[in-house]
Image (cartoon, rainbow, N blue to C red; front, side, top):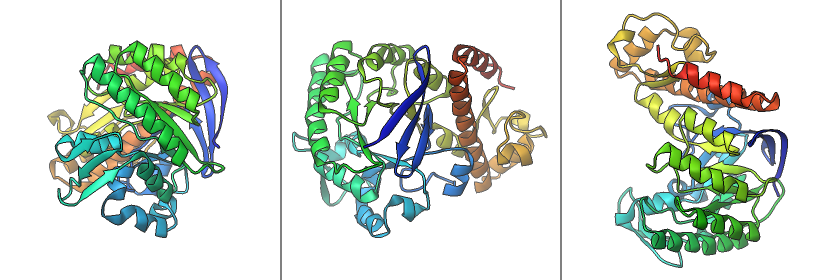
Length: 370
């Protein structure tokens, strides 16, 4: 029940619009991560000012301690956190299974103990995951899948992929279809072409509103991720959005867009902002570096965010050294603005048929950190 339109194509890069009950998402799009109903150090209003049109929330973190039921009583996540734009929630499966010492996977689902206290046992099944995401009023619900650590044997990757397909069917059956809301399937299979293509085919047969590519950006070299996208993206429906989960750096995004990916999420811009790192037109900058102590120029002279328009590198470096929370706030706001500016540039380039030129010029400039 989501409407998706691809309006421009430049090579394999796609420019589109995804319509939801809470507004249109222009693609390619980057989703800031708001794990526990908040993008760390930012108000929803500040996130909206960067140009973000959709946020990501996390089912695992929002299900603990009765949070999902509380949010449902508040009228859903949009009202609870004052974000009136679209929201995507991941299934919670990755977070549960990443805490493997506290979890146990079976055909039914994943039994786990909360990482907060390690006490009461919980069972997360595909049906329960979809139910929680419904309570949260997510515009885009993700199927529950099993994402294993790489490297892994082909037999282990097949086992996890086939389990994810069975969970995908159960997730789809549990999803309550309504206008402006949808559910995405998740392609698994590690770096194995045969498994990825089999996963894509079976998910397409089930039928989803969009298709995510999971199990990448987990430590493999960038070229292996790109090679996997080279054979995975063409196997997915051309009239549905494609979402590369957990990616990534600006260069990761450019390479994935070039291969036909439409949506991204990553904690990198926010986590970097809290650890004194800034993404700029000329590359990454560590504001703990002594050379910025008396540098009174703008953080990024080509950026129009609040931090760049009003504060110097010296002031930002001072805030970081003084352990002032304002430093993390300003750097995070800048990083989110930088990512959204990159996405706007990508969309404009695809519209004008100049994506390759844009990519080349961006990479050339980005490699000259000032």
